[in-house]
Structure formats: C-alpha cells, structure tokens
Image (tube, rainbow, N blue to C red):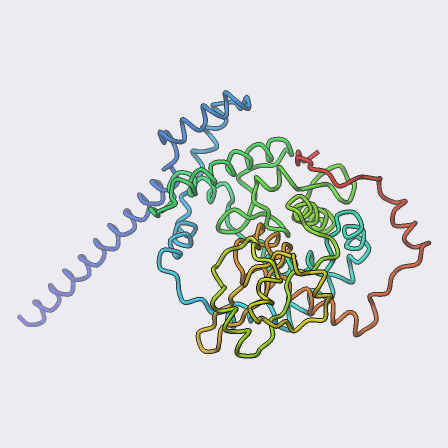
Length: 389
C-alpha cells in the first residue's frame, strides 16, 4: 500500500512539474511574442509614422513593417531607471575603470597608428590628439566595446516606453528625435536599421555618437565618399574633432587647472563647488579669496578667465577639486559628467606622456606634412550633415 501510495504521489508530483513547466514555456513564448510585437499598431508609434511620412516622405507600409519587428529593450529601461536611486559618487572607482595599464597601452597603439590623422584634425579643428584619443578610449576602449544592442530596439523603447521619472517627457522627446534621425541616416546611407548595433542608450560606433549627432557633426574624414564610424578611425577622429569644434573648443587652451592642496584653498574650493558645468567665476575673484593654484601660469593675464570648481567626491578618500575652464564644459557637451570629462582628460594626458617619454611625438618634417595634405582634399571646418554618401 505504501509503495502504491508513493508511486501515485511521485506520478502526481511529476505530472504537476511537467504541467508547470509547460505553462512556464507557454508563458515565455507568449511574452516573447508580446514583446516582439508591442510596437505593432502602437498608437504613439502610428502618430510618429504619420509624421515621418508627412515631413520626410517615408513609405508608411515599410515603416509599419519595420516597427512590427522591434523588440522592447528591457536592459535600456533598467539602465535608465538606475538614476532614480543613484549609488554614492566615487571618483576613485570611476577613474580606475579608465586609467589602467590596458587602456593606456591600447591608447598608445591607437595614437601611433593614426598619428597623421590626429595631427591633421588638430591643425584643422584645433582639438589636440590627446583629447580625441581620450574620448575614444573612454567611450569604446578603442573599438573593443562599441555595444551589442539593436539601436532600433533601444531608441524605440526609450522613445515610447521611457520609465517614469521627473524628466520623462523631456527624455522621450530626445529619444524620438534620435529615432527620427536614425531612420533618416540609415535610409540615406542605405543601411538596414535592424542590423545597426550600439550601446544601451543608442550610441553608435567608435565615437559613440547618438544618431542626431551623426546627422549634425559626423564627417567623411578619409575621403572615401561615405561616413563610417564603425571601421574608419579617420571618420571617428574627424567627427569627434568637428563635434568639439562646433561646440566651441578653444585651441591651445587648458581644460583644467590644479588647485593647491593647502587647507585654505581646499576650503574655498569646497564652498564654491556648486555642480554648475559652465564656468562663471573670474579666476581673480577666487584668487582674491585666497585660493592658490598648483600651476605655472601668467596669473595677471588670466584674472578675468572664467572658471568653475569641479568636485570629485570619493567614498573612502577626501574629495578632490579642480578648476574647470571653458574646454572642460565643451567636453561635458559630449557627456554631462565631471567624472567623464576628467577621465577623458587624464587618460589622454597619460597616453601623451607615455609617447613623449619614448620620444615618438616628434613633429613631422615639412615634406612629410606636405605628403599627408596632398593625399586628402582641402576642406575648412564646417557644420555638415551626415548623409552616408
């Protein structure tokens, strides 16, 4: 009797387990289908399609077919939600992700390989190589981490299903504009929008340009009649230089000044750090208050220079402070973060220092420079739209 009861109980347990497994599988299949079709006949997407048809002459049936393939990007929503409960800011941890031997070595190799193009970009746009190399290093580790997310999925999800936050509507408008520009760019370039991969928020290529930045700032810098931010380092270099130039980069000017480590200077810095990105205090005002700089510069000539105080908090160490100049604010047009701007700057500086120590940053001869210039069409810094042709 016990054996029969045990067998019966086992059979029931097995049957229940199989039933639960079947239900789970069916649920997964249903959810997968639901998610993959969540933008088919979506009311807001239909309005968006009508607008694109009206203003840009897209084929409505082609757009509906395209959006029927779009999948909800849960990871993009999750990453955007993280800012609702941000972790404590820790400059030391953030900095260590980028200022390490592997990334510096990769940056040295990238600079060596593309030194002529970097020098040309500096002459044309005024942006030094170390800044461009620093950006590519921080953004994609010199092409190793360009993102594996379907950009169409990401942009559609964030344009129509952005998580609830105080700035939700503003962010949705931003991503809808990028989605529009993404579709315009891929159409003009003859690219399949379902095959473009990028970051969880839609950044594309070596430079991690958003589609709206591609349309406005990306340029064909290798003269092959197309803009390729994935495999053309020249196009990425030229596009980054053009972006910074258009945002007001000041050639031959510093990014930051170092503040002295005495107690008085640090106290003034702490009191004046207000999180503002744009420099708005004359240097002379801070110097008059007693701030000292750990810099060699013509102080009298710089008294009217506008600066801001950048704070770099650490969890286990004292907060660091820097004086940010106009170019630091330009860098933060790329990514609105003090941590980001300082990481780009410091990574570029360390790579430059490594090359200087090896005596590799020697100005080319006039003959070599003439050869470089003669191989490329003459052009002036200008605001160009990327059309992929």
